[in-house]
Image (tube, rainbow, N blue to C red; front, side, top):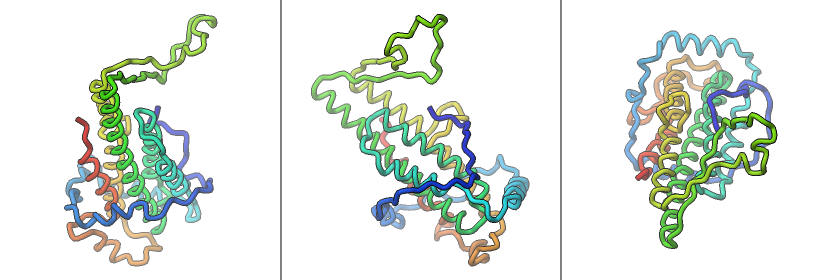
Length: 280
């Protein structure tokens, strides 16, 4: 199960070979970018809990401490994660959610990277690939919800119960070695439910993955998206990097006609898709 503690350093210089993504993956989405009304405004981003001056100074100083030739694994990590999401063949519950939970971990690490904002190109690639990743994930969550619906209908048509497996990440060790050593003792618990009740519980799980739980330390899709919005707001308060091709435009003209940051265009599309999810 995914936790917010990691043993992975996003600033390491390791590079991995990645497979190419299929072209035109988001053509159908980009055609709709100007058709739907924008639903996010920079004023919607709550930065009241942030000491803006201290945050910017801390971020700037940490960036300046990083050597200019330092590399990170953000791009390769996101490419691999995007390819994993693209390669999903099944959207059955709950197994398909594990890939998306891993993707949340990748997104969180790349949002926290201190190397990417050091250069104009890597900062741009970081923001755009994160938007692409979040949009891809929202599409997959939607597919999982639709699969839950179709599986429920199929089970009801044949008057069949649905099975819900309950596992635990913390296994209790037996007091004696010969106790609990039989094959299958670590298998998850099984609950048989009527299809309608199974659907209700399955959608609650997906809803928790998307919107979060009462535990604020557990990442959710929307919490990661909100963190990206806050980070981009901070980045826009920083002075342009030395290699920025047009510093004045970077300072004053990086928003669309509704004053929304263009770097968050794909993230806004992901948020719009989430608003259409059917958790009933």
